[in-house]
Image 1 (cartoon, rainbow over the protein chains, first blue to last red):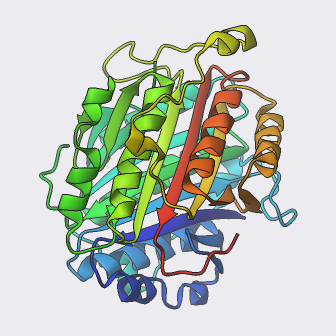
Image 2: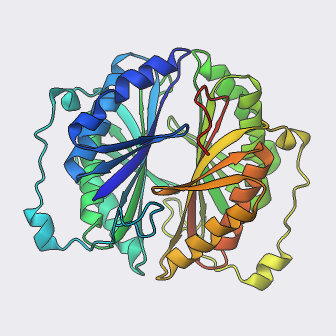
Length: 198
Length: 198
């Protein structure tokens, strides 16, 4: 069981309907959904977390408004407030090989902007060699079909929306091989009036 | 040297001037400022980082629009892309005692909303006992003059804007005693149409 806490920020006076339309029905993807006044938390299986974020981001982006999604993915977090929701779990390579890398998703999950900008960071917790893991995954994004550039405290990705989400998914998945508790933060932006910087 | 990467999300058609007005002149607070199309990175001394974020958030919130600030604070990060900007540094208790806990800030840094909502998370990296540190600092927020509630993957704070920023600053500062490399993420929301949930 892993989860993601995310928010959508549509930069428009009509932000309320954009958000509500974007997250409508995400619980039907097999996820537990908790909403509060700051963010939405999704818990469930890994493919559906990414499916849900792609659906929500795509819907908001298709309104044409400048929209940003900020997400914190978490796997293996101990100490959850409502009990053993996310028991620490060290995913072995063998388990990952068996884990389905499915993207047999609803059609909306593939309807993403042709250009997005993203900044993400990985935090493998509780291990001393965490920087090696981070460097490896940053290197991985440079092999992916996205533009990847180092920034202070983050890696900046740009390119096709689907490719960027795939790069995030790959980095998060790989890092779970190395640490029982992994957090990944990602900021994904579409329709920005600012010129791309990566 | 520590830093923070942040973005402001004003939920209005006029988001561009709100953002530009909010960040105008932050470099005059003695910080290095880097801007790209996703976020703004500030590097400098700890008091000025918080001063700058408070100034920017307060300005945006005073427009009355629903505005959210998302920030990732980082101290002691190794492996920065442009060299030894943030050399790992283990801050000892003695050093912290000498470090100025100043808030002799510009007047705007105190002009914050009476009610904000916040979700934050601490990531002390490279140490095995990181959860003990996190639990301690979550406990600290329950002693602070804010409402504090556990959430999946985050702690939810609500209350006076200045008190919430102070609680964040305290948690980040204390955690730097325990780990050479510390990241803290915070989402701070004002003027939301949603009812408070903490």
